[in-house]
Image (cartoon, rainbow, N blue to C red; front, side):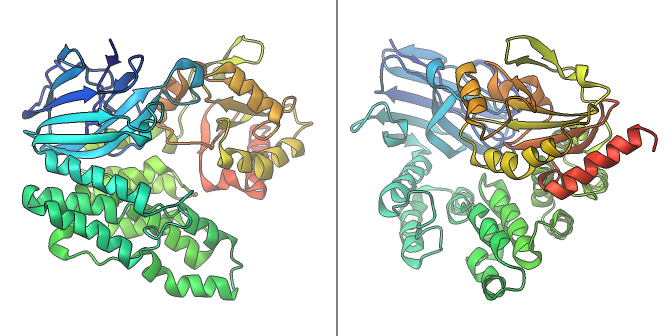
Amino acid sequence: MKNLILMVCLSLLFIWGVNGQTQLQNSIGYINLQVNYKGPVTDTIIVVMQNVLYPGLDNLHHRSIKADRISGQQFFFRIPVEDSSGYLSIAKILPEKIRKSYDLKGIFTDCLWEIGDDVKIGIYFPFHERRPEWAEFSFEGKGSAKYQVKNELKNLYLRDVPYADMKDSIFRNGDSLALEKVSHIFQKFSPKISYKSLQIMKADNLYKRDHGGSVSVFSGAVKDSVQRKMLVQNFDSIVFNINIPRQDKKYYKYSIKYPRYYLNALFAQTVAYYGKKRPSLVFRKILKESDQELKEKLLVMFFLRNDGDDSTTVHYKNALQIIKSKKYRIALEEIRAKYEYAALGNYIFEDIKGNSVNLASYKGKVVLIDLWFTGCGGCAYFYEHTVSKVEEYFKDNRDFKVVSICVDKRTMLWKEGIASGLYTSEKGADNLHIGKLGVRHPFISDFNIPGMPCAILINKQGYIEQFNTTLLYSESSLKNEVTQLLKKQLGL
């Protein structure tokens, strides 16, 4: 019999690994799911419901739910919830032999649920059962219209809006035809969905575009060039090209996509106008947000993202005074070590010979920690243009060391990454491996590291001086930061 575990990605729940039968302290109701899974019998499946502050399916802030009852291919879940709505995803656990950094592969992700949902979900694989992203679905029961909308939108993105890497997507560019198709789906199901849920789903799907590509284009343009001037002139029409009725915007703060989209857009705007990210300007714009809950959510996401500059520590202290909601204060307190002068702590990794290495053993040296994984383009770029240059510059200084930490789960993949020379050097750096825990390693969870690459600068006392700030991603500024620390520690 297939071992199907349903891991529900539940908004604003902070415990990972809780059984479905477990009662929450502040439970206000339930959602019921009955899943009929027609995939391979060897699959281990989890439906991922997550804390909306944290992206991805493997984050330790999510709560996993096991089936209360299994009958043949039917899996029954009675899930206690603390909020009136949230998000759930269905995923499969990847076989150990093909895992990289993550354990899960999404099948049906980021679907809005409401308290009282009682939905039967069918999952079928008419094309290729080894490709979960090609699964077909059926839904029926109370609240199923939301799931049907999600599925039709998913099919729209996959079939009616062909793209390889989002560059040519007509949806990405705000094409009126694509937006009409999305609007038609919402209109068709609107009688069956609450007004609040309808607006949240609109926020998810009309504002889900990632502006990383735009940032790259803006960054690559010469500051005073015709191209940059044209981009600046058209920025608002490109990025903020969909008007939001005021009466609807109050629901957008509940969206899993919109707050992140809006934050990305604010950063992209500073790149468009100033040629680089200006975190301080983004922080000040967030403070002008009139909706208190959206403001608090954006502030937490701002600091989780950590595109910091010299003033970010001051902003963090200000945010602690501004944020009143308990759930957001908890999230902000968890990352205090990133923004306040704190010791790195004891974290164990494995070196190339299989020996255990404690990061605390580097006390006495200025250390640059560089986190990466095999296949990460940004990691390779950061190593080529910054880390390798700084490593070479300080190669004769015994008081400085680059510690390269790979988050690949498989040792062989890590060693292949080292041998490629794309992410680290075999001789210049100390190469450490995070091991089978991957992104669940305590170092990743304790510092809420959202993605790779991630750079951390440590002083000789073993305290964090810079945590993934913009200063660490420029060759010249990183050299200057290391030089100042070396001089400071030598008493010069």
